[in-house]
Image (cartoon, rainbow, N blue to C red; front, side):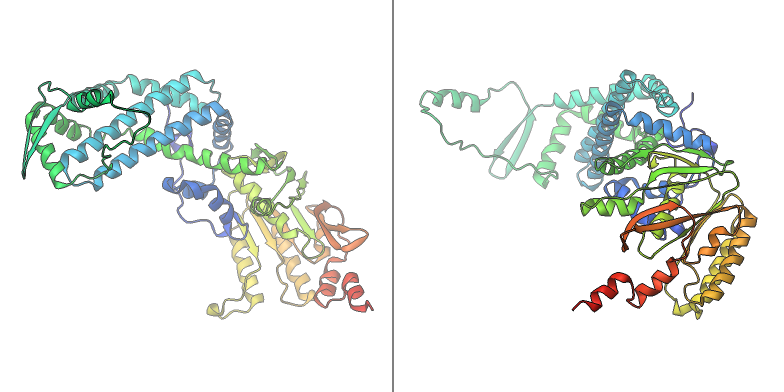
Length: 510
């Protein structure tokens, strides 16, 4: 096996990173999800990975295997240790760039190389001890075996260790008289501080105050320290010449494949850490079966990640929902009373499919999802006075653009469109759009107050947001597969005019 990337098994699987988030992210609250996932990993610039979905089921299976390996705590901690060491290496390199005096800069560089060598050897050793099942980590292990045994690495490691030993062997004396500072080699002179301590130790009675001055540790040197170091370099010309040569020779010591791994593996780490927060609250995640051929899809106990994360912080329970489409079914029409979870269901449907296309676990106990070519959303937006269009015209233009670009492999999510026109016009326009989606054979979720859309075709399925039977004003937030009951629009009108049962009861109370 040849290792190319922990995210992409083959070079041809690698897609160009997309720095800008897709248009539908805000509608589906995926911007909030990705922000929460990556907030502690800013140094790695992970968002482009989350903006770039995969196109082949095999590429998704490759990531599933890697993620499943990382669920092994031993491997997770080994990778985390490696990441900490690589972060320390980068901090040393950054500090080296900030410093002014040449030999101090070079010593920081030498320490960075030493940290790198230790990190690579430690990770290689850990991978040898852990049972790895994914092709990604197995091929990484093979790559590291070859790398640490290569002349390039062994020479780097040996020269680093030797130079550190040579510098540790540098001893010198500093004589200060007035404004004159003299530096000479250490010649075995006695340590007078030890002699003084031994002389006065016999007079010590109990605990005594320590009057020794503690020098403050500073990263940068002052000009006197720098001059002393220059003189020390003259006393040990060979050692410091070797340091000069080392820094020039290994300026580009960092292996590119290992550097890429250090960044890419954080994609998995960040998602696993985010997922673990929600799992601790009893929510379930699963590795979905993904196909770019079959449109028979299902999810058991799915949920909206953004909403769940917010409710978790409020210590509020999360309501899970399930759905399935089989045979010729393609479109879920969601109706029911306002504030009943319909929009949340639509967002969940989109989030599930998008995250599945990234090759990560999705919300739910079990799932089978479709690998789309493009995902389109049409959610209600405020009028934009800059385009001089009314809300209805804007809805029509946006839907026209979606239908022009959509294919049979696309997913379309529509949420409460045509609410700005009459019911008669909304029914007419919605039917025309649904007919086009049916013709395209695209997967679709349509949240609407128009119940008749649910029975347009054998491709449409009705799901309804439910209420507590004894109290229709109380939402359950469960979306169930059942025929539309015809009450959604009436109830929304009643709520708008404060004419629901509960609102009337409050108004007629004595």
